[in-house]
Length: 131
Image (cartoon, rainbow, N blue to C red; front, top):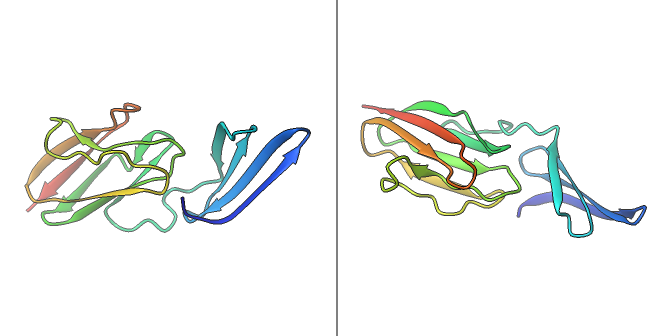
């Protein structure tokens, strides 16, 4: 995982971790094994490049976009849980597992409308490829 700063300390018998990640957000984790985590004050669009989709809070942001044929679309996971990007037909594209700070890139070769989803958490999105 990519972090610029990470602090961990114990308060009243519970470990607390605070991290500043590359997406210009900070995260807080609680528990001995940091089993709970959340992102506070996070802007998943901060520094987003064109044609990028942020995966945040089990959502694709934006959930719809139009691009020119030959454009590369990049999905970046800002969530602490794993996600994936799978075409609605299940065969056109499949990212495999995308972990925190991981990404998936897809170059659009065909014109049309393409639906996709994460089969781990149910979020969905769409991109339209124009000539």
